[in-house]
Image (cartoon, rainbow, N blue to C red):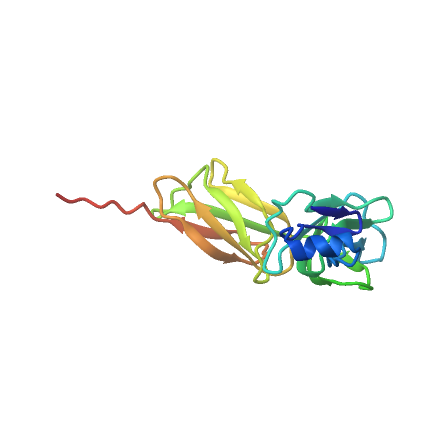
Length: 212
């Protein structure tokens, strides 16, 4: 394997006689793909830097945040960078305490300009999960599934004793959530927009099949 700090690792080809002959004559060529740095900054709507914001990169279709080094934090000047990335399309998100999150599709290529995020005022999504008789359900798993047709953000919580949950750093548009609890049928991709009022979500009992 060939390694260089400015390029992706490259596996050596099979060492056949033709390739070995080129190596001996110093005429062998092994193309390597260069690695790039994705950089940018996170600001508030007044253009002031946000220190300690979390910036996460993912695939073009969404962000899972599972890859090592997929999340970094901004410095005192609101700047961030992801070094040693291969060129290509990706999705990048920024979030910070007291601000609404933001998403940007990006294409990393030589000479690309740094990204710039401007985070605005957060909104609130609140709801109550009930059974079909309107009895509150505690301990329901609440998880964000999709926002703006992308898999993000990875918000997880549980309903309290009254079946309630609150998302206090929500964006200004709707987020789709999944709701699940043992003994009940799950509800998936339930769209919840920010609102001053409380959303109500009802879960029905799990189906039970009986037979002989």
